[in-house]
Image 1 (spheres, helix red, strand yellow):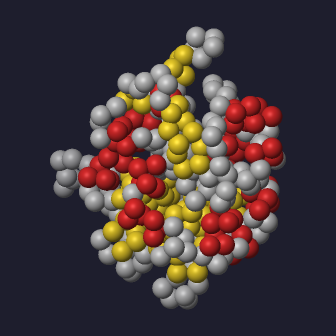
Image 2 (cartoon, rainbow, N blue to C red):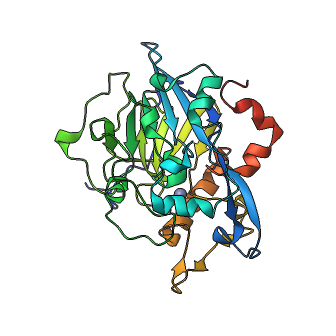
Length: 326
Ligand SMILES: [Zn+2]
């Protein structure tokens, strides 16, 4: 006898046989100034705000082998802005005042780490204020979301003076581009690392709770890469389990202002010199859906931190959460 309805397996969290967790530390990686009207609506025409470009250190220790894996999420601003491409240097002029020190390498040094200690750098996305100076990390492997590689190669037309990318940003032999979250992963590209203590970036995207597409990086539930579309192709977030009941969601540029999270403001739009409607998010509708999912997580007790989260940075209780300051 067949059931009246097709049996569906409800989405379930990744198997967490262990109580595996990761440590998460903030890394200061520069500050710059943003016109408020580019991010929220309504906003004054003149209001500007100094915001951080935060990076994060995520440390995973394998419970069986004790092997440590160190991941840095985003590299923030480039210490020497003259090393940005000319269009970005022009854009940088509109983001003053700006400070690039301490950059991510100086912030790692506060806690006693050098770039050579960093195994992986995961980029939330490849905008100029997140990519930092990859050549500072000659041994690390870089991980980018699906579609970010095409952007770096100049494919795709995005409006806005911040949307210029460097084709030679990343070393091809040390860069992993994640698979398309909306397509099945081909069997031969899956790496069987279930019994290994190495991170697995080539697995199938799976739902977890209210998040439809995630990668369980260490197969122990301690760190998820979360498909978080809308801001820029390849935009990804991290959901880090930091204790038995505590988790941190690193939201990149999914949102720029907590008033949007509190439904007090909408995502801003403006007209460029040619009269085109511009938005800081490449796809505003998708960005709104991503924000809704993050709101659900926050209501469930997950701590949410954005890359430019001035409110989080200014909160005195977070000062000790920067690497080397605890
Ligand atoms: Zn961005």
